[in-house]
Length: 232
Image 1: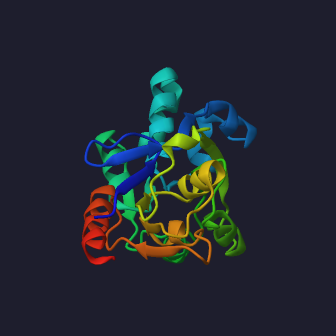
Image 2 (image 1 turned 30 degrees about the vertical axis):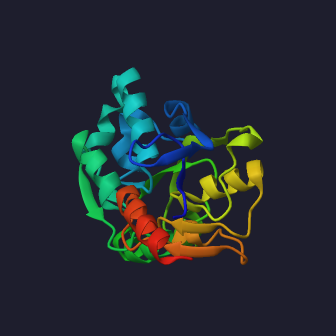
Image 3 (image 1 turned 60 degrees about the vertical axis):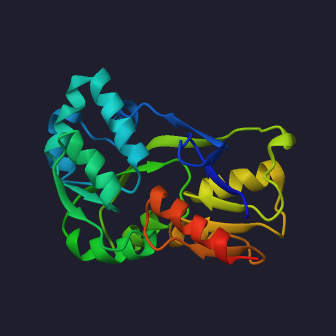
């Protein structure tokens, strides 16, 4: 049976994992001030938050723990791309107003554009994004402000860790696929499982790619196990 390898930024005990990225949580207060937003008058400039990643949530929470002035963000309604990220926010007592039905970047933007008309959203995002969410919102004349909350950095990995031919590789973010390719290139015998359309969208045309039926790591693992039984 084909070997299954999760390409990720942290270890998963359920499956062999190759850590190709590290997440750096960035200071947020300075970035907010650079947007000409005074924390004391936050509600005048921001009346909605946008999250498309649990790492953005983790970054904000970490910054809040270091500076109590940022606690005001808990009161502002949040628009969240998926259930997993929404659950993280709820665990930390944020006010979640909307959870996306479509957990892909392009679908999520279509959902929230009508809801954000006449609103002043602040998007907590990665340094590099591929979904184009920011562009779509700005093109729709949404008064969007953005703060870079975290950065994906590529790990340099010894070539001996390259997965065996015919492995099924699980990618849970576009950055993981790009980092994997940077380290190892691509073996045409691999099959790839993407957690969603945004990740699938960065696969090269010669990649035998599949999309997990549900957008969670556990679902990706189960789907990959099923593929391993079916693929020659």
